[in-house]
Length: 313
Image (cartoon, rainbow, N blue to C red; front, side):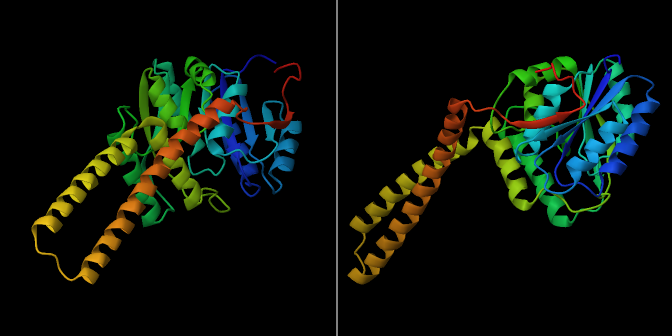
């Protein structure tokens, strides 16, 4: 079988209700392009029948491949593994839940053929999502853009097409706490957007809990901005000056009864101790990330693969 022109990377975590429909729609769209392709599903430690269903599809269609992790390593790591194993000249990343419609892919391919090396999907409308999800997502994208020096586009997820040369750059970057869309912006290259309306989930429930969303936001912020540390320095300076001013007031103004001043001082000590611990924890997070990188553990562990050449590393 000839090498694929396109590789479609699909991270999967407990998507048994939607996998077959995802495959059907992706196959229809990719076949309409009239060029060789492969579908790479990355099973990120699913505990339902996702692995079984995809394995069955692999047996029926040699263009479908499956990577099974030894445990759940996370969405961004699953995307990375798929790109590591992709053979195509263009690599398309799309989630399995069908909120990002596969039918947008031909428009991305057209942009790629015009010479763009990164083509990302830009959401102009998000169906099936509540106000809180929409508001927090919009707020995060805009805050991240203001807090970094990178041109990270707003209202853009991981649904995108990457040229082979961009994937090679990302393959050489082995950061442990990954924020793939930020890494793509950092890498540069000629980029363009394709606008689309994001659909509701086809079936099942979202796998991105509030906790996971916050972690992704934190990874994006701490990976591409030193602003939190700069804020801690400024706040520390302001509090120090405020403490000195307060001391001068106490010395120059007739003090109130001792019990009142004792309570005031106790409150100030508690407040300053809390602030100190907060920013110490913030600094600790950056140090912990340095420790993660120093240990140099693999990003993921593969338990098994289906559909790949076994001689391939």
